[in-house]
Image 1 (cartoon, rainbow, N blue to C red):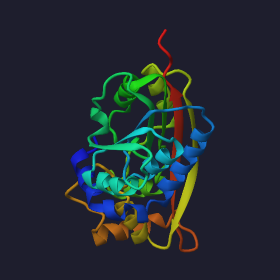
Image 2: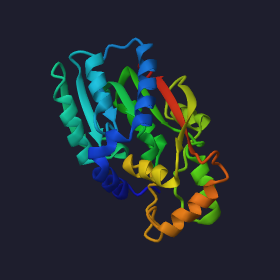
Image 3: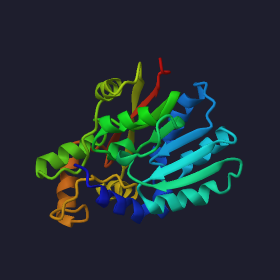
Image 4: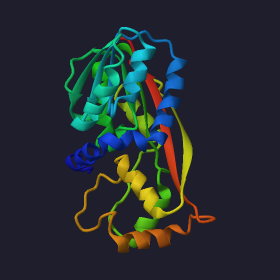
Length: 266
């Protein structure tokens, strides 16, 4: 189980510098916006689940004039950063709610679009989120999201598995599992695809720095082993040489994109 309070503290700690290290998350969001551009929808109320520092909400507000946007995140410091961004876009109304994605309590048939990017991986029960998303979407509403697939950080996962029983990376669901969960909760014909990105680093310390700054270290809290331990970093660095080339340390990310309509009531 992901320790939510631990993750909340991590994101609160790095909220002010998150944007300086989130180029991959921004690229994934931009790709999701390209998919949204191909979908005809005229929303009046949008929910941004796991809004982070508000970059995507800022784009949504510019894309859809005069909408009402609900920014939802479990990190109060992330929401403060989102407020700073979005107050500049005055054509739409923004609201900011601090809460856990797994504890949504909106009324049924509320939203025209639920948008979520690079956030669902921090949830313990994806099926329950999909169930709640379907309930709070209006009939004909759109649920569009991105998350991470099982090939994400496979290099680090394999290395840490060899030297420790402690889990340093999350267990990400594959495309078929995500699609099945959507269908199980009543969605029809979800569209799911994926792509891989490979980031490269000159040393293992820089990789871990990036992971910390975007809150992407495992949500499985441990007091016994930390990423800052020099001896542990040495073990990781040595083990990672299996994947390194020309002094470069690769880190693979598998982005999973999905969208699905909430069928009209019969």
